[in-house]
Amino acid sequence: MNANVYVIFFTVAVAHFLALLSPGPDFLLIVKSAMRNGGHKSTGIAAGIASANVLYIALCIVGVGHLLAGSIKIMIALKVLGGLFLIYLAALALRAKKGDYKKMALAEGSAAPSKTSWAKEFSVGFTSGILNPKNLLFYLGLFSLVLTGEVGLPFKIFLGLWMTAMVFLWDVAVIYFLSASPVRRRFVGVAYYLDKAAGAVLGLIGLTIVKSAIAK
Image (cartoon, rainbow, N blue to C red; front, side):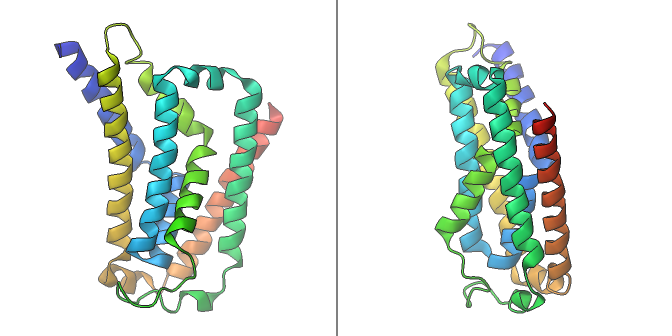
């Protein structure tokens, strides 16, 4: 690898990690799942989000991302579906009863406080990630740095695998921090209100996305 490739990797890696630190719909879903379901089941949502990311990364590597981003109809459809999905998740959070949170302080390995499953959490994570047009546009912008004749396909694939791994590992780290028994016991008193707040934010984000898509 020449020096330019190392510079590209450092630039993309730093930009990607900073994006992970920025709270968005995916992050809010991870927090909600960790607080309600504990570590094991919530890793499903992390795996789902990572899978959606790797799909968009693959599309950008092969150049399909440019075609999708260039299609106004596809981008509007993604925005509308994504916004409606966030509104749906917000409605579920806002409808939840205070009694649903009574067992949230249970230690890992005890009876789960919700009836969800790893597969259901995976589907929620994947749907959220794939219906978020910002993910496609973000990766398209990053890969515009590396989609040149100087950079070979192996490096592009390595970069895609690196970013996918970072998405999954960061999300799992957040999940296990929030689902740890001491942390959960501290949060149990405010979990109901945090979930409501997260639901309200998700709903506002969803409404904003749908409104902007319709306006265009």
